[in-house]
Each structure stands twice: as structure tokens, then as C-alpha cells.
Figure: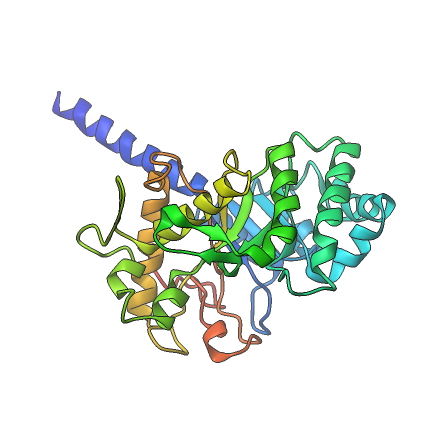
Length: 335
């Protein structure tokens, strides 16, 4: 009996690791002059059991290295390509053929992220996102991939006008003309909204009202009580705030995928290795639990980022890696 119980315990632990690894990916940024080669990076992902990767542009060496790796990929249409893919269906079809179809099924594409954190106030780019989404979706369908790949865009929380308490979350009035067509598009194709959220910036900008413990999942009890929902960490509160905003804008059926989240280890207030270690360790453990608004619904989450990137500015931005450029882990994370 003791042996059987031990076996069941080990099996349960193994299943937990599988659940965590399925929920957590890592963003692969490349703005450094001392980073490993793409084949080395893919090998590192596999050796660490990291099953999902976000890449921000269709780097051909990365796509080639991903062939046969079994890593699921969130591929970005960078903001610099929005004009091209929004201009015509033919252009979008060409982009998808060159960067997706030509590498599939060898590379496993999960999402196409059309644009990243486009500001509604950017009159040049904002008007391109919805037509680009539509064109890319049609190109995915044309190439027979719409059942395998979801098309979406990555937004940040600056679109939120009312942010507290989470149940009152609402998009700013001046962004509705931008976000509402995107929400309608995602509802129609049953794709998630991609959301970049950073509890670090909430804490660093307002440490008087947002405690370090609340931002790093280390609060011993509920910090914010919002009706029936109690919030012990800021991460859940931010996600549920956006869920509330989506409900008010016709997107109640949408799911959120956290396309970026992280904590810097140096370069600014609160950016220390210990704080970053606490955040990354706890977010990996937490995301399988869901949020108070959607308990038990695992949150697909991508850590930002794989490596410290020394070509980024300001100094803070150089220090988000969960690995050093020499491929050694900065933190002991269980994927």
C-alpha cells in the first residue's frame, strides 16, 4: 500500500508539471548582441521542457530552427508589417505563405499576433490593425490552417480607463472605436485576446497603494475584496479587470491569453533578483488555478523574456531574462 501511495503521489506531481508546462511559455526576444544561436535556443527550450514560445517577427533562422521541435509558437506580425498585410488580401496571403505555410507542419504555429501594443492614438498604425487581422485570418483559412492557428492582437492595460475594483474594469471611452471592432472580430472567430500585463509597473509606479507582496504573489491573505471575489495578488486583479472591460464591450465570451508578463532583476526601483525570482516562481505555480472571476480555468501565460537583452533601452529593459545569454538559468523555474 505504501508503495502504491508513493507511486500515486509521484504520478500526481508529474501531472502537475505537465499542466504547468502546458500553460506557461516564454517570449524569445532577440535584441542582444551576445545571445545564443536560434538552434541553441530551441535546444534550450526543449531541454528545459518549455513547450511554447512567442517570437515577435518572422525571423527565418528561428522558424527554420523550430522545424521538428514540437514547440508551439506565437508568431508576431510586427507593427512594421501592418501596412503591408492590411493593404490587401494578396499581401496577407504572401506574408502567411512565406512565414507560416512554408514552415508548416514542421513548425507548430498556435497563434498569429497581428501587431503588438498598438496605441489607439497612433493614427498611422491603429487604423491598420482590424483590416490586418481580417486579411491574415482569410490567408490562414486559404492555406487550410484556420483550425490550427488563432489570429489575434496583443494589447496592454493602458486601454483600460476604469481599473478598480476589478469588477468595474472598463475600456476608456476614447479607445472604444479602436478596440470594439477587434473584440467583434475575436468573438466571431472564437480567438482569445492577447494581453501584456506587468504587475511590476503597477507596483513601481504606486508602491504606497500596491504592496510588493501583492505584486509578487506573496501576500498571506486577501488584499482586495470585490463583492464575492477576494484578490490575493495583482496579477489576477489585472486579468479580471480586463475580463470586466470585455464584458461591457460585447466580449464576454472571450478568453485572455497573457502574451507577456515579467519582472526585471536590475535597473530601476524594485528591480532586484529576489523580487524577480519571487514573481516568476509564483506566476508559474499560479496560472493553472485561474482567477477569482474564472476559477479553475488555467491562464495560458508567456513569461517575458527568455534572455537579458543588452541592446534594449532603458537599463531596466535589459534585465527581464529568466536565463542569462550564456544559457544558464537566472532562477530555478519548474516548467
